[in-house]
Amino acid sequence: MNLFDLTGKVALITGGTHGLGMAIAKGLAKAGATIIINDILEEKLKNAVGEYAQDGIKAHAYLFDVTREAEVIENLARIDKEIGPVDILVNNAGIIKRVPIVDMAVADFEEVIRIDLVAPFIMAKHVAKSMIARKGGGKIINMCSMMSELGRNTVSAYAAAKGGLKMLTKNMATEWAKFDIQTNGIGPGYFATAQTAPIRVGGHPFNEFIISRTPAGRWGEPEDLQGAAIFLAAKASNFVNGQILYVDGGILATLGKAQGEP
Ligand code: NAP
Ligand code: GCO
Image 1: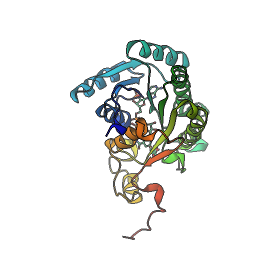
Image 2: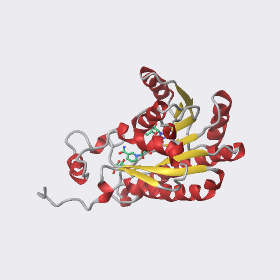
Image 3: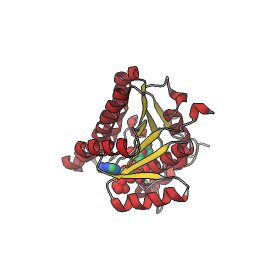
Image 4: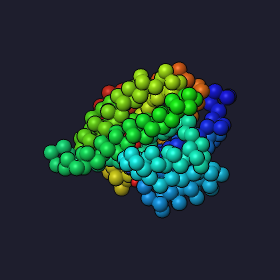
């Protein structure tokens, strides 16, 4: 249905060299978008372009750090010239550090905030500026998290960033909706990627905890996010603003079940 057709649209997915970003980029490509990815490591970009090509997708790769505003401005200008203006921005790049608050170095806390909250601000600020100037509207999708709503031991910096990103999403929506720019978030539950591998594989007890805490009874697979991403990137969501669409297998819907409960 053309409500979900992205043909002719240019989509920039930050950190789209693997994990959720790559799955989202492949989904947007399937819907017709031209795909642009970025990363901070040349090698990862090169490998990713090859992986996209195996799926018949031409991924345009740009090497820059989303936390450095000068690099963002320079590369957005290059993208404009070489590919075309960005119609869809997915603020996907992110890190996590799992350290109890009392043991966490301030520098580590600040690094997580910089990449997971300040960088989406920098990226969206400059993409929206261009969208407003072109009077063509656009779509901005911020990768939120269960930690936009819930706390968990050892992820204070990440939760502060993702909670902030939820509210930043609402503010972006407030300021930019009048320019026909829809800003929303996707809130994944627990997904099987490199980021969660340390708490999921090798018999880690958190694996069973998540399976029991998730009504769907499993970890998310990156492809589970493609439908939500296409919806929020397409005409179908033109009157949706400032919403966080949780794709979590039901985690946020339930208190969970007691030991031994069916
Ligand atoms: P991931 O496997 O760790 O991938 C994160 C990506 O961001 C990597 O490609 C990484 O590049 C890139 N990146 C990090 N810092 C960057 C920077 N300064 N500039 C440019 N790129 C940078 O994470 P994921 O699991 O796919 O998650 C993707 C997003 O979804 C993150 O925002 C994460 O917080 C969020 N999320 C994940 C889950 C989950 O369960 N996995 C759930 C909810 C939300 P390098 O590999 O080169 O460092
Ligand atoms: C953690 C996980 C989570 C997931 C995700 C959940 O340590 O709790 O890494 O933070 O990445 O954000 O939605």
